[in-house]
Image 1: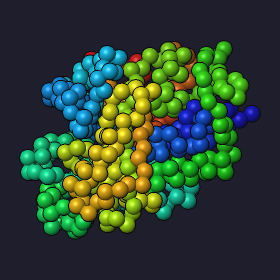
Image 2 (image 1 turned 90 degrees about the horizontal axis):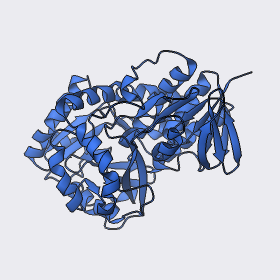
Image 3 (image 1 turned 180 degrees about the vertical axis):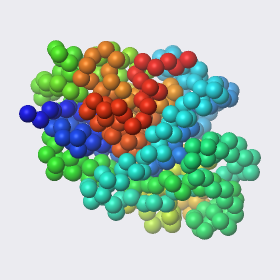
Image 4 (image 1 turned 60 degrees about the horizontal axis):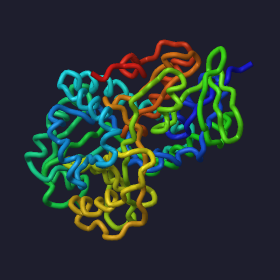
Length: 414
């Protein structure tokens, strides 16, 4: 009989894991309370960020904490009332900001992100989703020479990992994006990145491929997980108990309590992110433009212009703070003076973030037959396909093509 694997979570990471396991010959059941791609995967900026190797915490971040607490318009904010609960996670994050630790983390991130595009290519081709992929890279723009120079160190880190970065000035920038403000005269361009014009349709296309190839989709909410005798898990769902002799846990920001049943006490928090959608014809934007100061992105999507990014630390059950989304109108106009006053929609989602920014891609530490794949932070879309290949390696009993020791569930955050 064909061995069966259950995958919990039908976002981009879970769907890519399901497809990779299916390609290995496993029978796969994909479980989620929502349709594929309707969670955090729905609202991201659409970037396949090949240069995604810079962690959230970097040297000097400690001095930024007061601004996170006091300035509601900063790139990363912390809601006061949640600070006592968040404090242990924040202390772990700050402990990862030492220069030596940042170098280690960047190396581990680059080991994944530099494989991102090639990992997606066969999946996107087989799913017939080539029309969603755009090969244009990321254009990071800056309002001042000082900001451009301050970003140079991060760009040199990328270059050190073989990730191409081009320095652009003045007219070179407007050759890529004529509608940009003339005040923006400094930029870095990362040509190896790409973007998709609908993250939701990408996940849906991959899920349709999964079902077309014999995969099983189960729509049910998993209330809790427990250990199965002999290995694997029992999934206690609103539709009954699912017997999973092999389980891959990809539940994003909701993964922590599920993982705890298998000995993984992971410090996972939600990095709440926002987006707005503006009419597509309002501003001519050719590709991804990233604000180098505030770290948000403007992406041309098939259904309009998406402005996405920023980080808010609160909790899974805190109500959305749509003032964060409304901030995007003013910020986007600083890049594109013609950006409209009115938007079509606003959205908030929960990115799953670990203190060191690295995902968890590992066997469960205390129970066989369970593997963990979550905590990708702002790089869920980027790392979905490569995570799938690594999970397939683990479940198949092969040595993974990337050293997985930096991504263990029980790693140190000191």
